[in-house]
Length: 478
Image: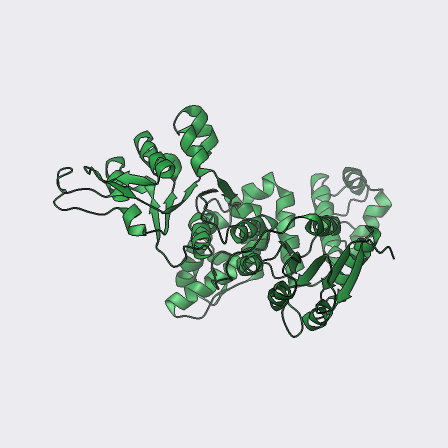
C-alpha cells in the first residue's frame, strides 16, 4: 500500500454500503479503513488519525453524532463527513452545527462520495462556532434530493445572520424555511416576526414596519413602535416582497444599507440589528428588468437564495407528508388518524398539487372531518383530485406518474421492483394495442414492436387471453 495514499476511515455497520465505498476509494488510489462502531473508531483515533472520517448517523452503541462530537475533541482539525439514510432537517442541522465538513444523504453516488472525500482532505478547515442548539421543525419534511439541498443550506447557515431570499411557488413552505433559519441561528432566543407584505395596504405598510409618532397622520393618536423595533435583534420574515411598492422598497433598502430607520413622522434615527429573511413566488430578476423592483434592493436581499421545490417535483415526499398531516389533523380534532386506501393513494400521487404543501395540509384536514370511515377511498376524494389536474398530469408526463409509483413501491420495500413493473408495463401496452387494432394481433404486435408469436406468448404469460389462445375481448387472431 502506498504510504502517501490518502487515509480515509469509514464508520458504518452496513457492510454492503461500507464495502462498496471502500472498494471505490481503493480504486481511486486511497487507503480506506472500515469500522462498524463508533467505539472502535474512537479507540483507533486515540493513537492514530486519518485525513478524512466518514460516519453514518445510526450506529450500534454510540451514534454518529456522538462520534462527530468526540472526534472533534480528540482531533480538532479532522474533516468529518456525515452520511445517513434517514435524511431530514434535524439530521442536516445537527451535522453542520456539530462541525461536520459535509452532510451526505444515502443513497449517494460513489463517484460523488470519492470526490467529496478527496476535497475534504485537501480543503482548509474553518474554525467552528459555539455548540449546537437542539431544535426541531417537524413540519418541514422531505427525502427528495431537492429538499435535501434546502436542509443542507439551512444547516450551513446555522451560525449565520446573513440576509436570505427564499423563493418558490405559493404554498411550498417558505415561512417554515424562514422559521428554521431563525431557530437554528444565533438569534434563536430573539423574536421571529412574519409579515405578508402583500396583505397590507401600501399606505399602512410603512407604519407597520417602522412605527409612527403621535400625530404623524390622521388617527395616529399615540406613538407606536413598528416591527423593526419589536423584533429587537431578532428576525423579520417579509413574505411576498416582490409585490412591495417602489416607495417601500426604497425605505427597506435604506434599512439594509444603513442599519437604521425613522418612524413615520419622526426625526430621530433608530438603530436596528434585525435580520431580514425575504420570500417571494415571483421571479425578482424579471421584475428588475421590467422596472418594477429595484436592482440594488434585489442584490441586497439576494445574498443567499434558497429555492423550495414545488410538491409535484418531489412525489416521493407525498406519502410521508400525507401521513404526517393526517396525524396532525387527528391530534387537533382528537380523533383516530385516517389512512389512505391504495386507490386513493395512487390518485393523490398522480395529482399535480397546484397549491403545493398548503393544499395537501388543507386536504388532510378536510378528509379528516368529512370522510365517513377511517380508511379514505377514492370516492371520498374531492372531484378535482379524481379528474382534471390528475388526468392532465398523466397525459402530459406519464414518466412522472411512473416515477411516483416507483418511489412508493421502493419505500414499501417489496422488491424486486422489475418483477412487478415489467409485467404491468407489458399488460398496459398489450391492452392499448389490441384496443387500437380491434383485437387484430398481428397489427397489435407491429404497433408494440414485437413479433406476433411474442405477443401471443406474452398474452398467455400475463393471463390476458382465453384458454383457447384468443385475445382479450376478441377471437380475431390475424
